[in-house]
Length: 290
Image 1: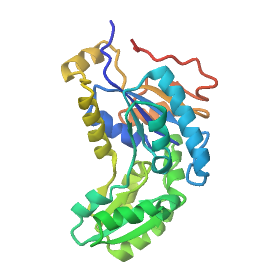
Image 2: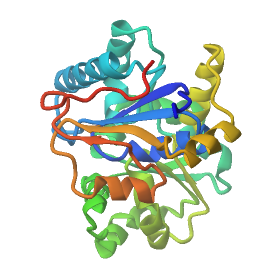
Image 3: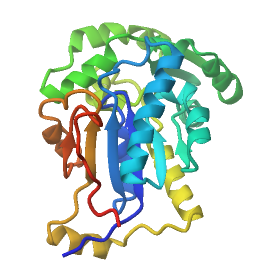
Image 4: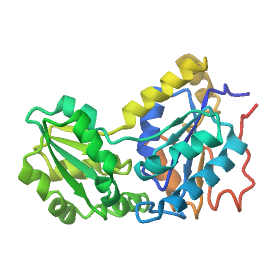
């Protein structure tokens, strides 16, 4: 039985962090076909020159465009979003959505006007963070932590490595000292660490990331393009026929992480196929691409 093909979204990141965004999109719009593309051969992006990040992102996304023909591209990486969006928009007419640290919604939630921004060392230093704070949180105290280890800890969750709780707690000490009641997760990897972060900072009332806002933006773009997401009853029929996976393909520029399919399944994002060393060593073709 042929499955119903919904709109297709390409989610791109340097590693597994973008899965937190893919999860938000899938929960809000379960009828979408998701393709996940990770440049894990280039991970991490934070210590790379901007020109190299632009080259890697545009090359890989161009390859995916040719195979999967997505209706929207989501760059689920803060570092890439700061430098690559203009290049992608010049390269393709497909709408592109980037990630912005959720300073604005955090300022709307905080009660004591004390916000913690948790991001990569590169992100907390970028001038656009200063502009976001000045525009949306000028009446707040914003404490920044740019820790080099958190992204790697999130990546290692895939292979079953536990988060080093004591080291994490030490890293979060500035937030405790500043008595923040709201924390912005300014990297898409960090929602994957949320359980451990909550244990380290039990006094924090609000945890804010960009995933839900990105999902809403994707929904708006699809609506503007007149692309309808399949209704729940159609999805149920596909599920019963065994023809619908949450993620059409999970693609990795390096070797596919061991146990990635199980890890994604635990997030509710079971992939129909996983491909490593993509696209060089891959003969992948998009299933259901009529």
